[in-house]
Length: 170
Image (cartoon, rainbow, N blue to C red; front, side, top):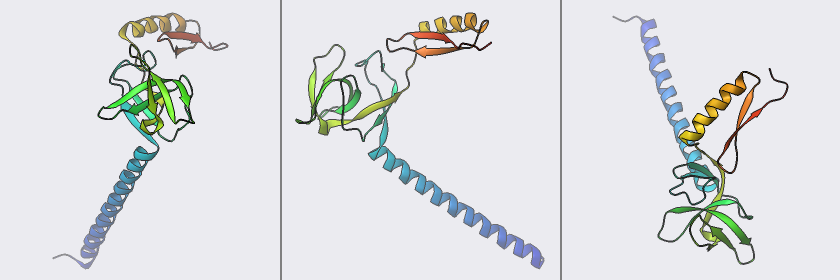
C-alpha cells in the first residue's frame, strides 16, 4: 500500500503536469495567433517564381515583403497580384500617388501599370544565393586574403561577390 506521502506526491505530480500542459497549450495558441496576425498585416514571405527582377532576386529566392508600405519610388522591388494569377515580383519604374498606380517593369517583359490595391508590399529582405562559379571564386579569394588580413564578402547589386579587407586587422 502507498503511504500518505506517496499519494500526495502522485497528486502533486499529476497537477504539475496538467498545469505545464495547459501553459504549453496556451503558449502555442498565442504564438500561432500572433504569427497569423503578423503574416496577414505586417510581413509575409514569398518565393520568386521567375528571374523577373534578376540580378537582385533570382528564381527560387525567398523574400520578406513589408505589407504596410504604401509609397513606392523608382527602383523599389515590389510583390503584386494580378487577377487570376499568382504573386508577381517587379521593379517600380514610376509611381503616381494621385492616380494610385505604379508602373512596374520586369526583365524581358513590357512595362505594366498596376493599381496600388493589387500591390502586396515592398521587398525588404531576400535570400540571395550565389552561383557555384561565384562561390568557388569567393573561396579562393578568401584563402589568399586570409593570410594577410581579415576579409568580408560583399554582394554587389550586379551579382558579383567582392572581397573587402578590413584595415588594421591582422
